[in-house]
Length: 164
Image 1 (cartoon, rainbow, N blue to C red):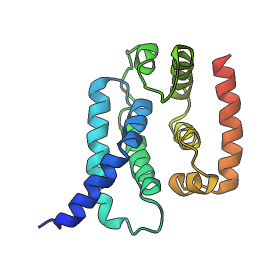
Image 2 (image 1 turned 135 degrees about the vertical axis):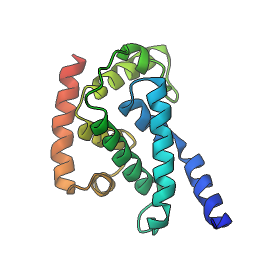
Image 3 (image 1 turned 90 degrees about the vertical axis):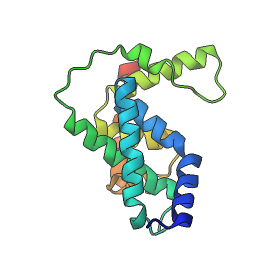
Image 4 (image 1 turned 180 degrees about the vertical axis):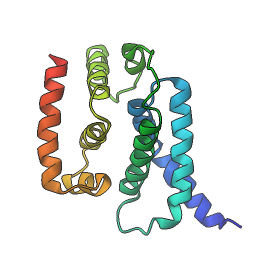
């Protein structure tokens, strides 16, 4: 039987941080159906893994780790699928807090460029854009802080090329 307090704590934390799931789904799934499936997979995996959350890190750090690993596993499973959805249509609807029309277009272009990165690099830049520290990024991704720094320099260079 499931501990009611444990379940309510889990649901409260996931609801409070649901934007993490939405952002990851927007970057790793191509169609609405795939985003819904991935979102469901992530929530299920979070619940299955919740007993392993010891509180050594912040809940959001743990949630990013589980969600990104689930998304990356999903990418590996679906590599052979042909993508047919227009990326512009997919990313222009991603809401950005406190943006005007010009900034909204810029955000859409940025997400288009990010979607062209390697899945591992997408995870790093997503965490960076969420203003996570290099230590937190390293903990979530499973690499050293210095490797995070090196990868971010390369990712930023690649994004600059894609956006110009």
